[in-house]
Image 1 (cartoon, rainbow, N blue to C red):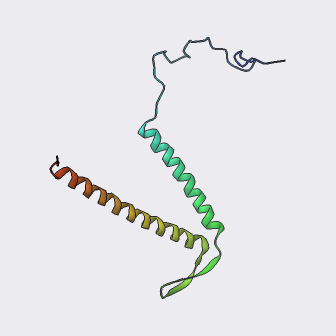
Image 2 (cartoon, rainbow, N blue to C red; image 1 turned 90 degrees about the vertical axis):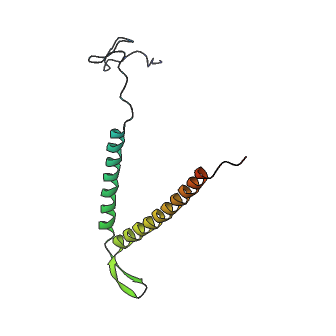
Image 3 (spheres, one colour; image 1 turned 45 degrees about the vertical axis):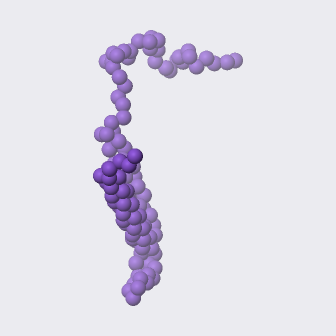
Length: 117
């Protein structure tokens, strides 16, 4: 026995083919991608990542010895890894800003210099 997916089952709503649902017209465009929707999605993802980060720090609370230059002490493992990750992110950000600044200077020089035949 075969089933045809184009025929609605007993639990599916039967809507006339090609007719708009109640409250919409055939010419209304579907809501598209907007900056506001992107902001909401980004906020949700950021909150989820923060929750996961909190769980990570809480589960890795074992104290570890840390030495940096002439400083030494103990700190929870999760916090030490978090500090290291933030430090790495800052270093990447500094390198990115330096590269963007370099490219902007090159572009500015190229625009200001007279065109050579």
